[in-house]
Length: 110
Image (cartoon, rainbow, N blue to C red; front, side, top):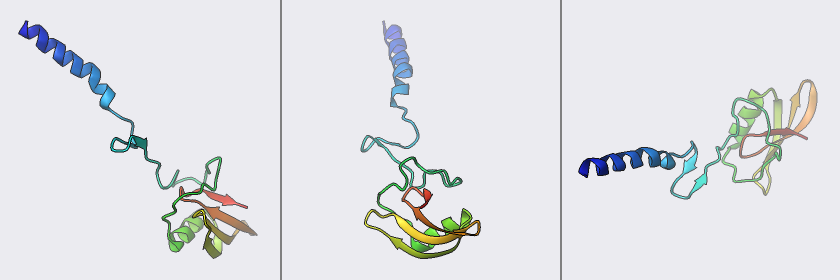
């Protein structure tokens, strides 16, 4: 009987153990998935709803560096609006553009 109970307990742990494994980014303390601060740091692909309002932790120099890294030059007039979205004037491909950068790092030309 003890052997059968032991086999049952071990089998139960093996089967149920997967239920405790959560995908990367899952926070068990609050039961939510944590969004990364930057949606895709190596790409300028933007979220469909970009710019996404949210608490922005980028500093002015970090925003300027990110824009320059993605081909923008002459970055000026950097301001952050009430939704924590950064706005700037810049040059890209020989033309003047207005850009935004949100807390996820999405760059949007306007």
